[in-house]
Structure formats: structure tokens, C-alpha cells
Length: 103
Ligand SMILES: [Zn+2]
Image (cartoon, rainbow, N blue to C red):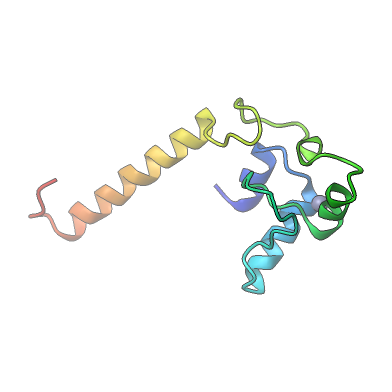
């Protein structure tokens, strides 16, 4: 799952998703502008300003969320499946690289 797919799955605004992706390109890797934010969602600078100025709450930024768990819980079915598949393919790669490894 790409950052864009994940962001949309969680219902994050496009501006925030693209700001997050861009921050990776510049090696800033996701700035948290909101000091007490531990939600896992990093709003872009403009959206963070609205939250800081108390115009909106961080959860009000979440729209069209596909993930069935309520924000900020991030372990929806699709994510669980994705993580399971990732683990399975990692394990497969490991055994292919060293067939004598016992798991
Ligand atoms: Zn934004």
C-alpha cells in the first residue's frame, strides 16, 4: 500500500497526504506541527494551523474514511490483511534465501 492509498483509506485530506509524501522526498519524514498529537495522522501545515487555532478538531479533518475502526485507531481489516501478507512474503523471502533455516 502506498502512502497515498493508506492516507485515503484513513480518510486523511489530500493536502495532508501530499505534504506527508513530499516531506519524505526532502527527508523531513513527516513533521508533527501539533504538539499533543499522537494520533498517527500528521496534518499539513495549513490544516495544523486550523487545529492549533481551535477552528477545527483534528478528527474533523477525517473524511470518507474507508477504514472501519474509528480514528485514530489504525488497524482496520485491510491494514491487518496487508500486514499479514507483508509478514508472509518476508518469511518466504527468508526461507528462499536460506532454505536450511528452520522456522
Ligand atoms: Zn491538509
